[in-house]
Length: 315
Length: 245
Image (cartoon, rainbow over all chains, first blue to last red; front, side, top):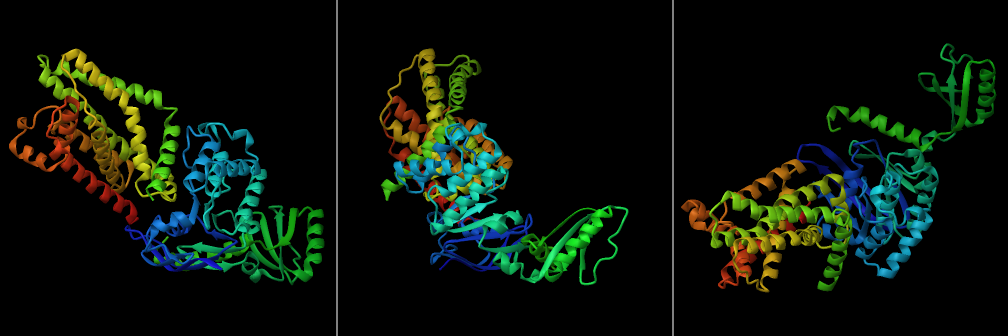
């Protein structure tokens, strides 16, 4: 079921900056929905409006049938939120902060404490549980921020860059908890510019650039234009070129000594033996053969739109 | 409905109180030194101080402390919270609009209280006059604190950044401190400024403190005017924070 419906949303700031330009999206229950885009693309502006913190210039936002533009004060009951910056909690321990927010969001004292312990345990944060937060690192602050949004999750959970500064092991634990929120029935909106990570975590994704949605769908659908193609990446010896490239291969790009070549799937074995020969001859230092990633789709969409939208001066 | 609000408010006060607990001894010490020091300092400024003048100075003290909290501290704290994203987070919690600043006010009053009391005690001992505090002092503190906070909160919402918010708040505080009949009777002001003050809440706030501390009567008008300003300020601040740019 569609839980969040955004229609033709436009936000223009008083200084003329067009931060969102006709955005339409549907986000479903039990779905992790990624909002990807470069810095300044309008992602945070979009979620601030969904949270009722900022009023759109035009367009509509409905969450569970409630018109958030007409009734922004209904949003806090429906949504929980992890902002981009860490919420200062100096003086509070993670346990105190998380359980207090749980109670503010309607849990009983006992339930808030139980849920707090559960989350701290799942994210392997026991060693910080009762330590005052002014002594915590940025990454731990980020994890606590996630717990503040997850302790009594709204029907929509908005996470703005939740994995910044977090170590790789706890990142995985965090992604498990993000998935658990969706499995529990929430629609999770994940704002990030970390494309590779998002690819594994999201069900669907919208790529936002210059205030517009330039692509939307599952990571697999967005990569469809790369179907039948694998990528061969070569790190070449700067003095030599890549001579003798088989005719079915296409040079995708060359940046410095990094060469990216599109190879038809049928020729993957040929690519492997060709690259091995090049390495043995010393022309190539190393190589990697793999499927196209969401990052390739992402870079394709955003670069394309940037070139097209630049004359409007809306960046 | 009211119970839900009180529960949320209590939890928010708990959040702010625990957050400030680390700084509390320093803040309380500074407030105490300022409160006591102001009274002793005024005695140097006005050498032949009599007990009537001293009573004026002493009973004006609590109002100045609350004005400083509402007009100077509040805009600074709210602006900082806005620029750090804390304000967005607080606004995203299912609480009525002004819960966050009003919770801050409760904590700040608690911090300022020892200093206010000490200043009054020093004044009584040093200048030999008698106080008759009335129970109406409590609603007076709440009313004045809320009004000053709501005004300070509006300043924070209407100014684009913390520096301007601090500047605007301090300007208002400066006017309150020097050009308002708090520490002196209104008849010392030029007639036009006295007329301006008849429309502003400041002198009525001073009357509230003076009346409730010295046991004087006839505070109905003062309660009415300050109450009116309080409601107007809270309503405006609420609608401003709900307007959402």
